[in-house]
Image (cartoon, rainbow, N blue to C red; front, top):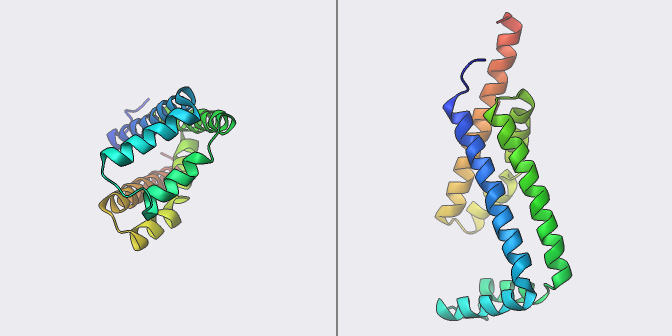
Length: 156
């Protein structure tokens, strides 16, 4: 088996880290419970000297007050599903399975409209970074897929 490209391994590590982070956040939310999450958010807003009635803190505050322990269990289950998909993708990319290259390209491209909207509406450097990283990953996956197809046609 030929050595896998380092960039593919880097993308696999990125996907695995996204899955691990999702698990940490999901299980932390589940463990805290809705009352503790609400208290922590109020403390965070106070500590950061944010106006709780301004747009973003206000929206988060209202969303948090809609959360109950049943919702949190559903969120935790969703994070397990998301993390499982990311881990399978990471494993496949690490081993350069062709289907995961297609999956990575498609799953990255799905976010383009949201990332472009974020860049246009907010233009924060994190929005730009997310868009650029995703563009690079999707372009790289497309290149791998095209190269694989060309190699098959040539018979290599």
